Length: 148
Image (tube, rainbow, N blue to C red; front, side, top):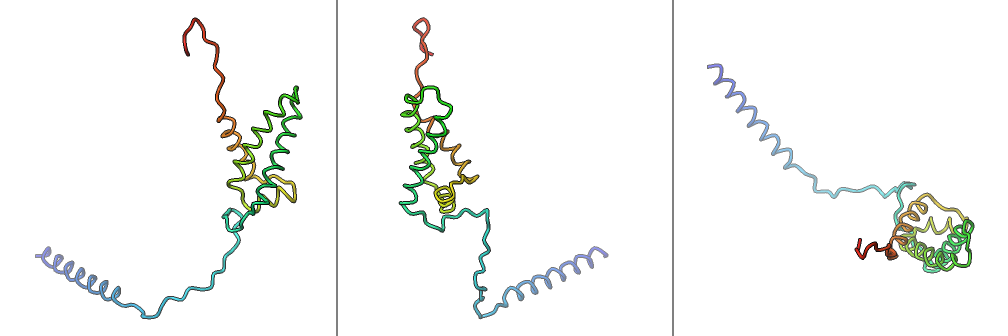
């Protein structure tokens, strides 16, 4: 008979719990929940696009970045005249690619302070990979009339 009392007590506890759960969830306030005024804290890791980058800033960034890229690459070049045209195309592609996702902070630091932010460096590497892989690869030598 112990099992019977255990089952009876368990059933009673389950019923009381169900009644309490339903009564607590049924109670609610008719008042609207008042939210406190938004106190947005500046997060330095949040790179949202709230600040708008103007077209003039984008255009200035694009040309300054392309010129800086060409100058940097020509320093180590042997044939500067030949490499300049090739580098101008590649650097303009990179600058255009960067300009699409340019934030106001990055534009300001690059144009006014002449500094490259870490996020701009990371984007540069991605853009360089994208632009340099875009070009068609030259055909290799064909040995014995076979295509590779």
